[in-house]
Length: 265
Image (cartoon, rainbow, N blue to C red; front, top):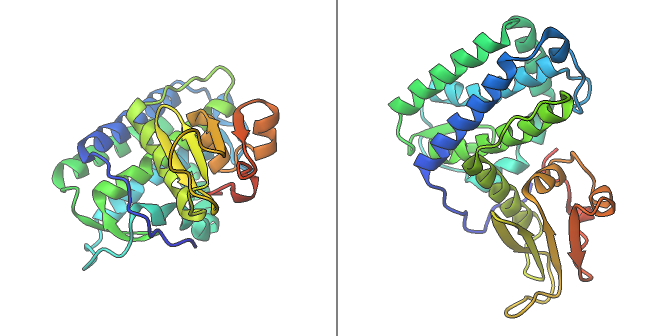
């Protein structure tokens, strides 16, 4: 697992809290309108149906509840940028738990509404500095909420891809935080300053070993939009496919990121 030595970007805790609740609300409202036939549709996540994907989204948010209900760890030993590299280790357990949740909650609308109410209550009761024991280590609640924007935005895209005509909107702040965290994770995975990755309007990072760019137009530039970046970073689309579909513009001998992606899977 790469070590997150670079200084982490700072996020406004109040804006992150609002963003998580807003994006979860967007998902909850859309799910409430889905028919049984739509919930039974396949997704691009292996053998998961839409129903199981929705259950997983709920699980990703209740991770906050579960952590807050445990004793606070004695000291912080993880930062936000450790999280993207810690998720793969628990993927099998997550899949099993997701299927159990889907079976236990036939009324997904009620399930998500209850989660939303509980989350709001927890966030009203705990400061952002409260330490949580997470899958990446002990980190503050405010930081862990940033990781929830990734879960919500990535899986909102999965839902939109699975259900024809579904167009769940993205909260701007949630999409920005998700994009920035995944961009910064690339810079941790491939430290350096020879390549500039641009994801307007939310993020610009320097990465990849080689001659460091200091002024003027960088010799190696990659540019894409936020949703394409999220799909690349999580393996929803491959580098060559994105290039062939003109979803990515890359120039320079160190602008091929295919060997560095995905960051999360």
